[in-house]
Image (cartoon, rainbow, N blue to C red; front, side, top):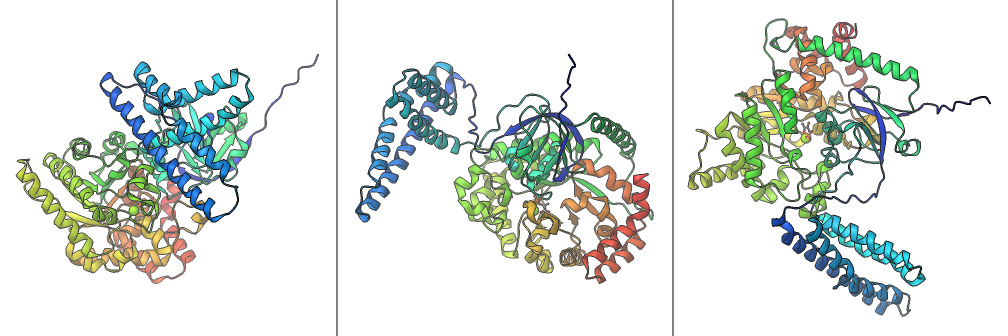
Length: 599
Ligand code: PEP
Ligand code: MG
């Protein structure tokens, strides 16, 4: 008999390559709505507290159901029909189930007996009850299975509200595929286990993309139709350079992948030779290259590439999956660790910039939905509205500043009043620490502002009077100037920092800082793209902060720049009003270098 070999043909889904590199692995499809129930063992000392946590979740669920029933009764009075009656009985039954039921008692027992966290205990108990009901082959009980699940899920929701949703454990070598991945989801990925990820939504400038780069994982976002084309277990290749997800890659694609890997390793070896070389233009101007840091694990690569310090520590990333606001001690320990690892180089600590796509679930619950709007209670606004946030963070930073040079950076500033208010809180935090007898640095750290809103850029001259330095956040500055959500894949093609509106904001801010003689840097993604280096230098920037792996490429570009020529080209660009022509002027100036890079 003739053997028929079945080969599954390769499929390619396109999206935005948001984090470079290519990796191969096995798809793990994370279904939307998949209940993510965290499971972990507890030390004996925590068992009672965990049972108490369960009991208070039960109380909250009962209150929620009682409110629902009350609303239903009001509606029933308004509507002279018995339509709501059935629902009323159901809610009553649910309330009963949350009284001293098998579900609650069983979960409590499991916490004690198996030293399980409350979520896992409830989950296992639901499964056990449903199995038992089904086994009895009684139609009435079988119909109750759905009710038990409903009540149990209500309880699980109350419990997981207090903690961030967890991604399920994945086998080593998985490529995570999802409809959407938040920055908080991405922060849970372990690069030792996950080889890359792709999602249907998300744009290249959003924080999930930044997280992928921080983790060094190849990633593709905005890949529409992805979930229809891939299933768990499929062999998959993620191409973070070209923005492709290749499902069932052909032998030819695998060969190409191997070649590109070899090429990448060769280039990295070549770039690593630049490590000890100073970043100096052809005419001898030194440029400060610093690192953006989101996770402590990035410090190895910060040191590896020879960064001259941290130009942006996004502190909110350190706490995205936290249940509650980080304490002074937690923040102090982390910031101090980073300062010590920076080995005497300055560390620029940005205060919490929660909000927009970084509105982690637990924080939205604490501060309301405005936190998740890019125009809402984001960054400094939240920190001032709840000044204890700033107070606690300043105390942690001030204590850590004893261990090395620190600068403090405020996000999302729009007025000088915000800077002054923050400065007052900083002084108050210092006084409080002194009263507590804590060691403090000899002078308060410089307090600077992110220029990332049009308001900040257009009043940069006024802000310079009350700020010790500026850091231009081109990511948000582009988003707010062009009114384009940076995390929305549908408008990602319109997002362009070379729009003259954005460039004028950047130029105006740079000029204001230079006039006021305060330090100036760029820490948005353009700082790490060699395409923009000559333009930024031409506009007067001498300090660029970027993802650590970008430093060698930007340094290579700097070595080829003649500053006088870059300044002339920057003036030409700033005289131009058409984005296309600006792009040509930028790329034409870079051309010889790009050819060399490609060769
Ligand atoms: C920016 O907006 O450019 C910036 C650096 O801050 P983030 O990306 O964290 O919003
Ligand atoms: Mg920003």
